[in-house]
Length: 88
Image (cartoon, rainbow, N blue to C red; front, side, top):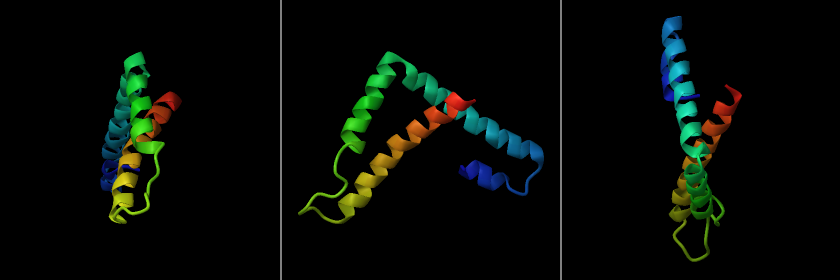
């Protein structure tokens, strides 16, 4: 659920539909961008750099793990949008 969808709670049905449409449009856009050959290469690189690496490394500041998890979350959000678009 996005902030737009949360903001639309209690609002007229048209606002809810608009929030859902924005979410679907963003998912479709993400799918188009990352479904190309170059987009897939970029997504593979993002996963290699930010997902397929240790979150915490001995000897580093513990806050590094929070920062690394934030990076991973961005890549996972992209993948979630792609999967959502495939279902539309």
